[in-house]
Image (cartoon, one colour):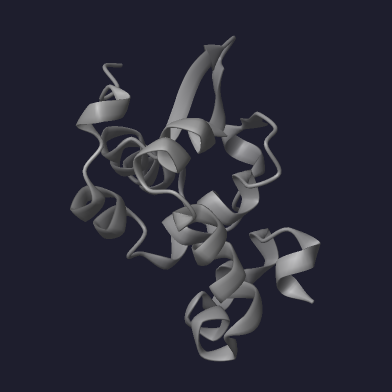
Length: 119
């Protein structure tokens, strides 16, 4: 899995990757800074569909994907994204917490969000 280097991460790719409710929910779940097993982040979505979403996020430079046994561990590329686009991730997660219409667009995937975003 070839990840883009920090300086290769492009804003338009990141924005495009975050333009889907499942991917936005995945990123929100990863904002705690921990690594998460790929199957533990979003429920109710087929494995093949999740694989597609992880690839989009990985290729855009939004997440790290590290093999661990039969699964992958996912984590957010916080340092790289903050270096390229200071304040971007904070703005996105803050907007999700404060804007009911944005939160509503996530629909069924709201359950995957950390508690501070779903309150």
